[in-house]
Image (cartoon, rainbow, N blue to C red; front, side):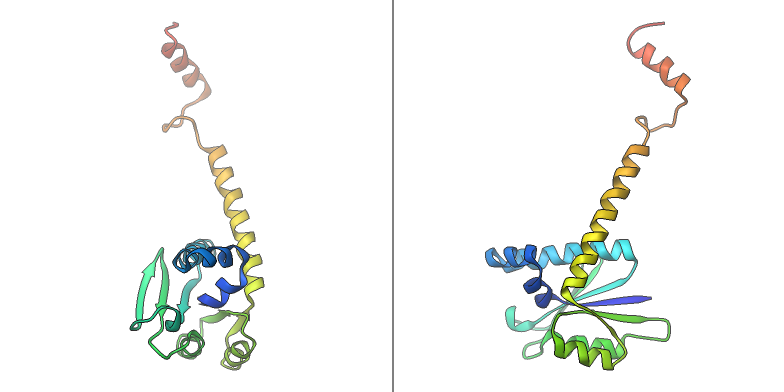
Length: 169
């Protein structure tokens, strides 16, 4: 199984859409990132974990699941980088491949040394745009194939029902 660890605030700071949301309200940027990662998870089938630094959200360590994405807020005085490094070292088994999404060069070197693969914020953004295009295309195809009736009817039966609806015999 592939596992994607996302440095939340690093990605928010790198993606134009999320930067704009952060300027107004940080929580909106976080929520949008989590929604986007849920779409990514649903499309790719990967396990996705988003990690946020505690220094931007004071409080104790907190873990939850939002939209089927694991979200971790680090404990006080622990950075997302430190938590990601621990996760990158502890999560993989022989069948797992860990990918870390961050543009922090130092972090990339550390996780690479642990056997994880790195994805820059820009690479993830491009991949996310491709995933969203594919999802949109698939939804359109499904909608076009969907019958107008909930019960599949032949053209002949549909014509008969349409005549009855109009009061014709």
